[in-house]
Image (cartoon, rainbow, N blue to C red; front, side, top):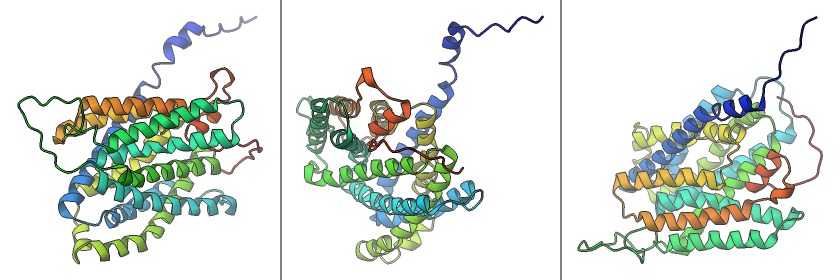
Length: 358
């Protein structure tokens, strides 16, 4: 009589489990770094060439759409029902509006504020907790939202720059301001873009729970966003650019290629991997910490008017606000998917979820 195989001890599982996600964490950090590098390259190129940034993003979306369609082939496999295709197309319209506002915010506020403005999507976590939350500490949510607003207010007043940071000591070197502080009025554009980005992620997560189906629907979302963005890009080009701006877009450059590969295509797969395998959603303090390290590196390499101490102070306040605004009750936390949805602004419902085609 054969003896049963000995069960694997908990100590062996504890020793082996941290090793598995290590390469995935490296991929996540590198992918996020390349995406931020593409944002800085895009900003330097568009601001120096005085091109229409919306038209530039549209020309990047066209090849990105082709790449997604070739990789995912949404027309193959089981036919997608209208209950998923129609919200996906609508989500493409939200994505197009997000790119318009994000591009305008990038050109007006710079890459640092545009990148940090994307984390304003955590506001949806406060909204979902206020409307649909049960047994949640609403005072903690409101306090987190106040901390986020304080961080964005300090950033809009230039606390991340050497010129306007009140505790910066330049010594004998006189820091000449390049331009005035952005102001909270201009910060509304990237903050609104961040909320739209989080809303787009929530809709995509609600439509599809299976990872393979999510990728197929994302290809349709990008394709519909490209169609929605076409008239806006043409109108913005006619009003704000020279007549040969479209011709200039046809020549490949590092800003053009990096935006397509790292800013659109690779960024989706990296964020999807971080969410599914590492359980790191976009609007989370862990993601913000990785982004902050990349921003410090880029600002230092490009030699911008940057204050590390002021930036760390504003980022710490923003991270604390996101943690308080998106945190659940630790003693009554639900399933991992439930907590991730709420932390990224998903509206929690008690409706049964039916099986979806793959």
